[in-house]
Image 1 (tube, one colour):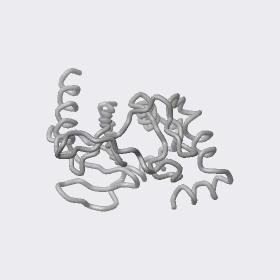
Image 2 (cartoon, rainbow, N blue to C red):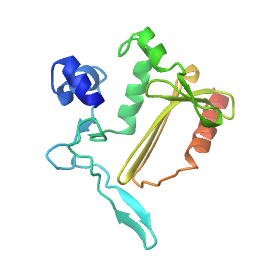
Image 3 (cartoon, rainbow, N blue to C red):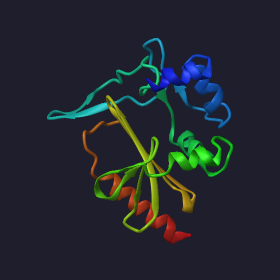
Length: 179
């Protein structure tokens, strides 16, 4: 629904809007939509765990505009996150509104507009968003005061990934300690 609203407000198809307003200005070299039922050449294949081992599980959101149909890389996600550190992408007032807690969640986390917010075990403010689709999980985390981005991409979709947040906390602590 949001992709349709954005396309209507932007006066052009969603793919064109994203390309012109996000991908090109931020120089996201490997961020592209999957269209016409075809996988982007060279992208990872998705898997799921079964009793017999790993089984191929293809992404079923190809061509569902705005719902897991864009393919990207960790480098492009890092470039996207770096744009949050200045006004190249979003004005400060909009960025602040997105990253302000609006809803309190479980275990000390809260929710802004599109971002989850919490404090790491080491006391660092963390902004993060995850995503999943058939065969894939993604975790994009930012520690703004440290100017640190931690991206975890997996081509195995697991319903729960309890190891991810503790891993991110340890990476943040190690990076902060090394500075």
